[in-house]
Amino acid sequence: MSQYPTPNYRTPKQAAEHRAYMIRTILWLAAIPPLLFLVMVYGYSDQAPAFLRDLTVQLDAMFGRPVWSIITPTPK
Image (cartoon, rainbow, N blue to C red):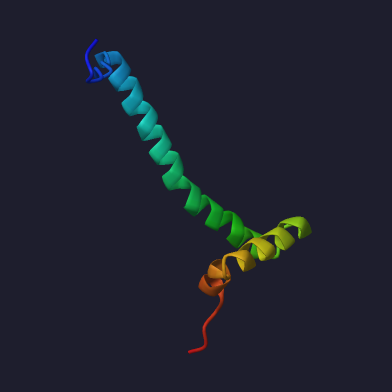
């Protein structure tokens, strides 16, 4: 028995499946922040249901109001 561990060999098919899995994971992680921002902006709109408005305000306050500071009109 060797004291050095043998590396795990991946077939080309396994390597391709792993790459595809990693690409899907990275794309989903990249899509989450913009989608969350859009939902929160909708939550501040007049068309949003009351429960979504309350959830949006609480969630935005928990993170220091970044969405509210972006969508608030600034005086000229």
